[in-house]
Length: 329
Image (cartoon, rainbow, N blue to C red; front, side, top):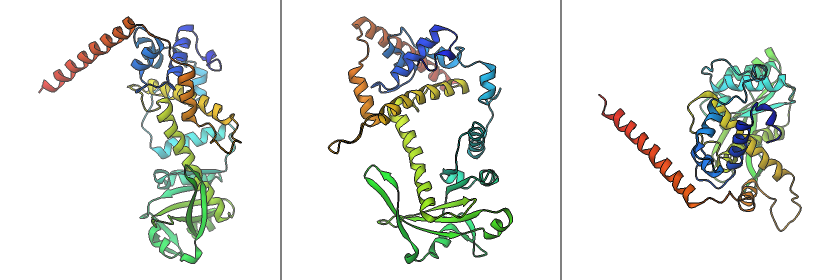
């Protein structure tokens, strides 16, 4: 928390933010302002709610412009958001050579054009009914996959999984050669097949230079790390436990949740894992240890009962509001 303390102009929101982040890795059923405030020993959730909605801790106009925060948030598709995020990362000096994504991004021609213009390789999943140009004929990805003979499939691992290396059968084919002649670069259809079930998956790929099949396979496997990161954030620090209704409140909760996740991830990365008799410390195990070794402040009976009365009073208000809304014609 000391690393972000300078973003708070007053000590009160700084202390509230510290209590908020401390509560995120705790053993709480739900991680919202009510439960986090009770865990911190606050008399009510108002301080937590102000932290997410009205407290001045990220209102520096210069920082907002640097972060490209708009005056009024507007709707944007996922591909547009991806273009904005990748562009901001490149402008900040992030060195990246590849982009990987699921079918939402594989079917976005604006994203693919953006990446190719910047000579960034990509491996983007697509559905089997998506059409590609193969040998001068437009075919669906599933139809193109049938042209890959079994003898041309290679057994490669897409990376380590929870139960060992993730081995699949892979094949590939050059596609969109006419477009490649016009704009440069290499384009492939990457085909993955599960060795046991035979279930296929398809990827549209691009690189500014020729690449071996194994490189595309490894890039395709990198995307699982992103999915695992989201799962860890939801399961360990309550990334999806927010109960906010404003753009600012959502971003503030997400920011603090990711800060808590980074704390756990750094601890896990710095723990030695050279004992063959034990797996390295994982994020869930570190969170469990913290919950036991740094237990919550003991609470008296009156404090527990006060929070119970507070919850039931506000639940009664919410119930009356729902009943009134439903009774209206």
